[in-house]
Amino acid sequence: MAGRSTSRRSFLKLAASSTVAAGFATSALAGSRTQLLTAEPLKPVSPNDRIRIASIGMGIIAYSDVNTALRVPGVEFVAAADLYDSRLVRVKEVYGDHIFTTRDYREILARPDIDAVIVATPDHWHKQIAVDAMEAGKHVYLEKPMVHRVEEGPEVIAAQERTGRVLQVGSQFASSLIFAKAQELFEAGAIGRLNMIEASYNRNSSLGAWQYSIPPDASPETVDWDTFLGNAPKRPFDAVRFFRWRNYSDYGTGVAGDLFVHLFTGIHRAISAKGPTEIYAVGGIRKWKDGRDAPDVMLGLYQYPETDKHPDFTLALQTNFAHGGGGGTVFRFIGDEGAMSIEGGTLRLSRRPMRPPTEQQLVEGYNSVFTFSEEVQRQFVEQYRREHPTSPPAELDESIEYRVPQGYDDRLDHFADFFAGIREGKPVVEGPVFGYRAAAPPLLANLSYETRRPYAWDPDGMKLLS
Image (spheres, rainbow, N blue to C red):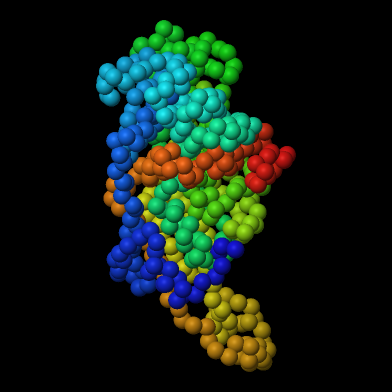
């Protein structure tokens, strides 16, 4: 099982022989140093090996995805679909008049010159468009969360297995150098036996709280409102719901589906986990009382079972959209011999193993021996000396800091993996099974928040138990 104890010597050997890193820089602290992680450069491809992509949805994330995809050699952007006319105009302004645009994503799927699609729509359309695209022979880069409702996951998995198309879920921590390094360290036992993980994804801005701008021309004439609603409850045109859809459970998956999914992705990658068995969440709308039904504060508690990859442990997740101390993402993997923290592009590993107390600590420290009579203290010390003939070694605590290079983009690595899967027929890092296992616990957190009760989940069979 991963998480086994390692000695100081093996720890130092591990630190000096990374498979994804090169070059130590010694810090001023004893037993501490910094290491720069490196990534494989992207390889050129033949002009005949071009992959043509389209994006279904052209909002904020779509531009980030398209621009990143175009940095991978041999990728060409040819078409886009969106339900707001001005976005279709903007696509041509940015990428050229040759880009085919449409309101109807089915026209994208019908084009034989398109090999793959990016699905960057509101969450309630993810399952249907992904399945339709694979059935049409397209490979799919599907933005997270993979599905809107827990019960939709098996249908996406089945469609991918049936069609053989490549499906990559767009949560880029799965491809990150930082989490690859965390996995290497964890499997080598650098933190000892894992017992708890803490992670948070906080924000402190109105835009971070999904108060997206609403254009002055938004109307039933410029927006295909009926198509947007899809399987959601019917209601009159509402520009706020269309442009700020993440605030509403009819179309989005709240803070859990948007941000907890990233946390689960990184955690599952680092320790090769399949998911929790027990789920409970609480939260509320504390700041953004603007008609939304998605909470802006959420805490999730998850219990993970022991597997051949990791021991049983407890996971605590947090999201706060009005965090006055600032935003950001932080992970802490805590074991009985050390801890790993990940923040931004930096991983810090600290080892402070629990050591047997010295004789002096026993009689002078925070211990009950000093409450014994002098004669009993003498007897206790003599017995301790017999049972512990040598003093505990005075080992130094160790710490190592790992950093990604300046400008590193794990989203680029994620897209490179997607296109390599298409070209080479190899499995991607976040296929539908991985993506569903990262999405289901956050979706169940939403359900727990709504019903105020815990839920039981089967991470192997990917089934809701109760």
